[in-house]
Length: 235
Image 1 (cartoon, rainbow, N blue to C red):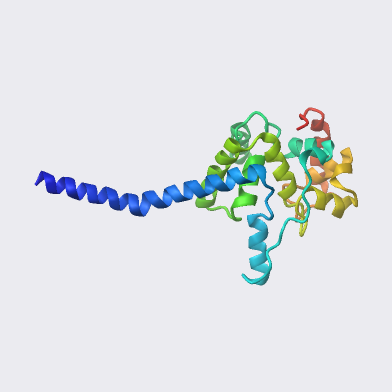
Image 2 (spheres, rainbow, N blue to C red):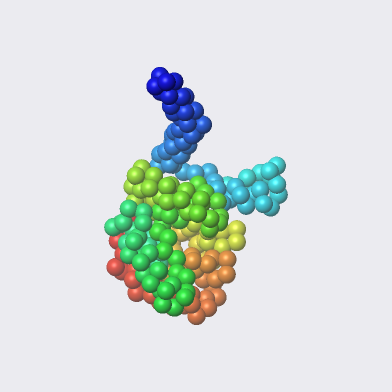
């Protein structure tokens, strides 16, 4: 009787490992390779661009690729500082999750009933490069998982470089070089301090806001970013 119970228990363990354990190990290996690879290679596209290609023209459509890539040390220092000032001021001190910002967002939601983003630059890279748009718990869990991997494998300079080259800066505008050319007709290498603050100010809502025609909210953000830029480190 005991031998039969042990045999049944062993069969259940093997079945569990076959149907649950093996797929999990494969997912773990693939995702780790995905993230480790992009520490050294620039992504040719992002998951958001690929999904956009499918939405616009179906699976047979040629996938959209990243048109420009600018190394971090060639991007205007003003733009690097402005993005940190506007999007993630504790970028160097956290490991992917800014719990101080998250606490403030929860407090603001409870007091004023207004939602405030608490995503770090690393979290934004995780969802833009690897994931899909959405607010489901599955997506949020995947985002957290990729955030941990990115912080584990990439140095902070690489995270910022990938962010600046893949971030959505408006309809058809992806990355710092595309944004600088579209809005100011210069390379991202030559973006001025005011231009940098203008670009960083619209990042929370790049499809509704414009650096060329700033509304009051964008103008307030721009002024704050200009004030905070000098406190930001230059990566």
